[in-house]
Image (cartoon, rainbow, N blue to C red; front, side, top):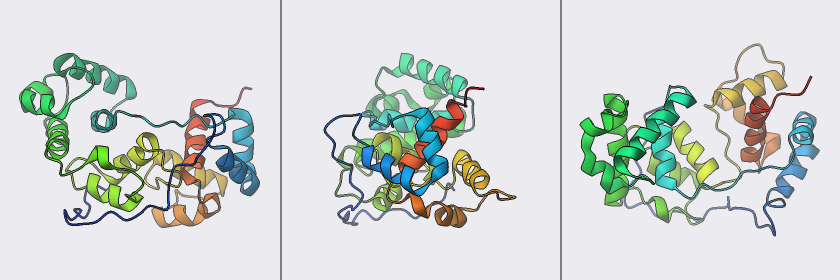
Length: 230
């Protein structure tokens, strides 16, 4: 999952068909998505009825979101939060590429990051500072695949992290994170499978959710966070 084709610097981003929805208020922003999912999937309809409207909103600190994702890899959310607080205390808030590069690997490791994670943070900082990965330029002229290719050209940023960026930073509406355990478990249970579905199977099972697979995934995660009242 860590290996991906490096995006060509000469690549011209294509116009994206996957634009953010237009709405008159935050409550209405995902109304079309919610209506679609309720219509095509009775199971999701029950979750939506219990959980309520979709609260997905963009995270404006794109660089900080990716730093946090690296910090959180394979550790508990509590441990990740503590490390991130120490990193902010060391380098300031919000995270800035130039400041992290100035600190260097040993200082970044001192907050509790492993050597590999410290290098991944610096890889990200260098790519953003140099303009090799233009985070602030990611807009509707970039399609999802082009953004994933750009992000995964950085060692330490895998497909799952890139997809989380599409979902939570950019709110792209039709992302299906097929490497996410929660989504795979939900699809297994929803369809009564004996084993977790493979990525290709996940795409087939979630086809009815198009073009709002992001919103379906959000409700799946919220369902884990807000179990039914017994």
